[in-house]
Amino acid sequence: MKPAQWLTRHAQGAIGSLGALSRNPVATALTVLVIGIALSLPALLGILVDSGRSLAGNWAEVRDFSVYLAPGASLERAEALAAELRQKDGVEAVRVISAEAAVAELGRDPGFAGALAALPTNPLPNTLVVRPAASLDRQALETLSAGVRKAPDVDLVKLDFQWVERLNAALDLVRRLGLIVGGLLVATVVIVIGNTIRLDIQNRSAEIEVAKLLGATDAFVRRPFLYLGFWYGAFGGAVAVIVLLVTLWVLGGPVAHLAGLYGSSFELGSVRLASLLVVFGGGVLAGLGGAWLAVSRHLAAIQPRIS
Picture 1 (tube, rainbow, N blue to C red):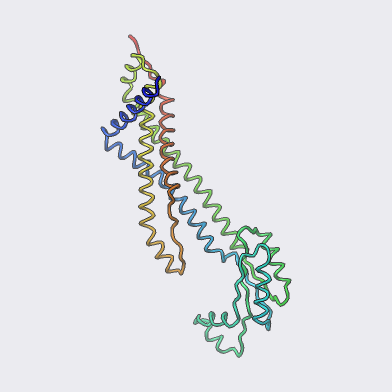
Picture 2: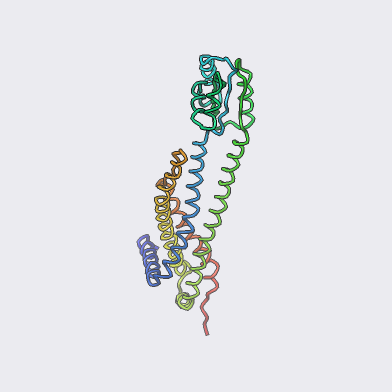
């Protein structure tokens, strides 16, 4: 077969299957909407997971540990110790909180203002807040904090490992849940498209028998159904992209407002063009996969009967 003839037949199959969809607009629209919504959910969940990782990055302070200097240790000693810690491997940043700044911040709390005013001297020490690198595991954090604890003029090192472990466990759970839900929804799309193509094959069984009786090849008979799956997947992928963009646009403002009320700058993650192309391409692949499953299983069972 010449390339021009091959392209012509495929163009005929694509246009013909598109015409078949247009003759049943309501059924086609409902199927496409189901596919689009099913495809948009794992994509939206993926964006939420990425936003959660970003939020976890903004919550990096849960990994921070506080270094309380001994009473009487000067602010200059705190600054010198902070400079030493910044040179250590695994330390991302060190912040110095002077005793005066700490008592001023605590004094803004009405529950402590009266008690602090009754004290003759400032009871709070100079403090360092050490932010370890995100790549450090629990053992490395323990080693780092133990080394800091041995430094001169250090009275107490406070590190809450439970927050770190809970954060990592929550992120791992969300990632695994996203993979499971995404896989199930993609499988649902394949099943929906496969079942739709199967019904179309059954409705056109007489036409298929006549075509085979006249010598039509399996590829010729199979082609329009594969293009049906392609169009279902393509339109469903386009709907998924639209649903994804509209959902993020609708939720973006309220989420940012809610985060602002809690003093956070958290925002839902934006969608990159590559992600939208993945969603659309996933719809096309799911459509072709569902159509291929239906065609390979049901089309071969239809054979012309010669009486």
